[in-house]
Every structure is written in C-alpha cells, then in structure tokens.
Image 1 (tube, rainbow, N blue to C red):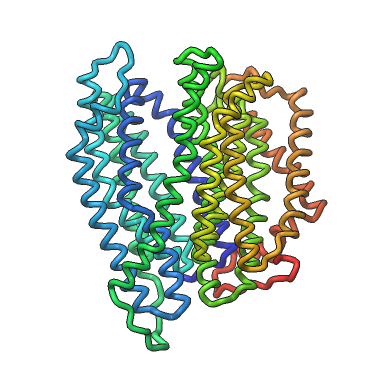
Image 2: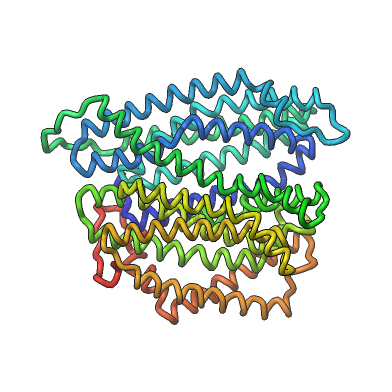
Length: 551
C-alpha cells in the first residue's frame, strides 16, 4: 500500500462516506415495508440504544489514535507509535467488552423504560422483543470497536483509502443482510417480526466482521518502517496521559455537538404547545422531523465534512509536528474551500428539492418538506463546525476549542425559545426559530475557532472568503435557474416513483449549471483545479506546493 495525499484522502473519504450514508438511508424504504410498523418500533428502539452504547465504548479514541499515530510517525518514533496503538487498543477492547456485558444485562431494564407503546400493541410483547433485539445488537460492539481502532491507525498513517473502503463494505454487507434476511425470515420461513428484526440488527455484527477481515488484510500490507533514530524513553504512564489529553477534548466536543440537538428535543414540543396552540401530537411530529428524520437526510451533506475531517486531522497533525506552518496554512484554507464548494450547492439543491426528497424517503407529510427546506442548511454549518473544531484539535488549541464549543452551545440554550417566540410574533413558522438558533450558535463557535487559528498561525482567509462569495453566487443562480425550469417540469404533487425521476433529473441539471458557472468564474480552477485533480489520483509520497495567496 501507498499513502494518500491530503487531497486524495479527502476525496476518497468523502466519496465513501456519502455512499455509506446513501446506502444507510435507501435501505429504510424497503425494510420498513417488509417489517411494518411493529418492526419499525422494535428496530428503532433497539438500534438507537446500540448506537449510544457503541459511542460509550469507543469514547473518542479512534480520532485520538489517528492523531497520536500521525504525531509519533512524524517524529520518527516508530516503537512509541506501535506501543501507543497497542495501549489505546487495549483500552478500547476492555471498554467494549464491559459495554457489551452491560448492554446484555441491562437490556430488559432499558426496553421497559424507553418504549412508548402505541394503541393496539401489547406492552409486554414489545418489551420482550426489544429486549431480545438489544441483546443481539450487543454482539456487534466488540467488532465495531476493533475496526474503529484499525481505521484510526490507518488514517493516522495516511492510508485513507482502505479505511474508507472498509466503511462501504461494512454498510453494504449490513444493508444486504438486513433486506435479504428480514424478507427471507418473514416471507419464506414464516418467522415472527421480532425474529426478522433480530436478523436485521445482527447484520451490524456481520458487516463489521467483513470490514474487520478486509482491514486486517490491508494492515498486513503496510511496508515495514526502517528505524533511523534512537527514541527518547517514554513511559506507559506518559503515553496514557497523552491518550487522555487527546481523548477528553474529543469526548467533550462530541457531547456538546450532540447537546445542540438535545436543546431542540427538550424545547420544541413545549414551546409549540404552550405558545402557539399546537396539539401535542402535532408538536411531537414537528420535533421528530427536525431532530431525527431531517437529520438523517442532512447526513448526506455532513458526510462531506466528515470526509474532510478524516484526512485533515492526521495531515495537519503531521505538518504541525514537523513545524511546516506553510503546509498547515495551505491545508486549512484548502479544506475550507473544498468544503464550501461541495456543501453549499448540495444544501441549496436539497432545499429546492425538499418536497420530492421527503416524499421519496418518508412519504407525504404536512410539515416535513417545509421544515426540511430550511433545516437542511444546518448540515452546512455542522460540516464547517466539525472541520474548524478538528482543526483546533489538530493544533492542540484546547482552550479555544472549549470556548468555541461552550459559547455556541450557550447561545443555543439561551436563545432557542426566545427566537421561536420571535418568529411566531412576526408571523413566521415558530419551529424555524430553533433552526436559526442552532445555525447562529454554530456560527459563533466557527468564528471563535477561525479567529484563534488566525491569531495563532497568522493565517489569512482572504482567498477563501473570495471563493466563498463566488460559490454562494453560483449556488443562488443555480437555484433561480431550477426554479424557472420547475414551471415547465413540476416538482410538486408527484407520486413516490415519479419523485425519484425528478430528483435525478434536477440533480444532474443543477450540478451542470453549478459546474459551468464555477468554471466560467474560475472558481473551480481556484478551488479544485487540475493540480488538485492530479492529487486525487496520486498515491506517492505527499508533496504540496502552495502560493502566498492561499494563506
């Protein structure tokens, strides 16, 4: 294997994550048709709990491993790098075993306390089925933890391609087993809905096993490193302290980012029912659209940010450790430019196609398309938010990281309800105040982070701001052009099948319009260009040339 350059790594990681997200969204339609409402209740309750326990198991260590491996590799401390990986890996394996046992033992208690039983269903039956499915899901935690470790190691060594491909393998195997297994169980063997859902959940275990086998084989292909220097003595205690110093900020970052969503979950229903006379069922539907269903669709845009982050963290850490500040400046600006170039038109396009997109995935909804049309722009700010925070993490700017996180979060907490009431007072949909609150809160965090990086590195963002203006202008012209076309080819009042055709048609037309506009204005060449395109297909030793205006 050969290492990936920063640009190639970003491209590969982004492509694979988007594909993984699309697979993860598309399978929902046939799966829900197979298992019905009862299966959806069981699956949703069990899988959400599994994800929570999985996050507890990994405790932010995969990204910490990526940073530590990159840092020690840059210093030439190969023995310390391997020791650190083994120590961090041991922590993750032990935590995954503990979490697996806890999930298995606590499954009945969890099932009893999380389920809200709809009319017409037996509470005892649903609790029993959810308990069984939760216990089945526990089997995936150890394997997912193992592949998270290996992905962190490979990403830290700049082997982005195998790490990213393993995600697609994991998701593809999972989706195939979910659909084939659940259909076969119900329609061929006559199994219960609970058994079909158990098979679907077990697909996470089989998918992670397939990815583990692939990564294990790829890890063995890494060329042996020749030791050129003596390493300073670094004790196990020092390594553990360093692991903790990198892991704790990541945990705090993940918790606060999750808390942004929790603010809406705790305030939307109460505000809508007490101040806007919404029925509680109606308010609950709106809350679910904003905090759950819409966020799944937003994941397609957020995937671009995650692709940038996966490549950016080890690359920045490597350059910063070597004190190659010019390369650090270049990569920060280039990461922001690529992120904006890709996410802005995607968010604008999804906003324009909100009705057919919502119809295709979730069916008809009185509120879904209208809310998603605005809330999709949260995904743009989440991507920038994540990239800026990971940049601070890469540069070990922890004080600024905490200030940015806490400032943005506190604004969202304090202003969420007042903004919803303000929107209601001026005649706009009250629930859109929550969207604006989240966006402003994240903008505050982004601004603080970028300012700290600017102050610390003396970096200039002028070229990035210039490209951003052209990108926004091109995306707006694309939106206006598509609006004009919609007078001849409607995007409303469609069937579910026809919405798929319309989405494909408008996506192709919109992408062509956007590309032509950015090509004419030379934005494409300035942000991507032939030089960066060649980087995408280059796997040799990383070499980047940078110009003063990039900084």
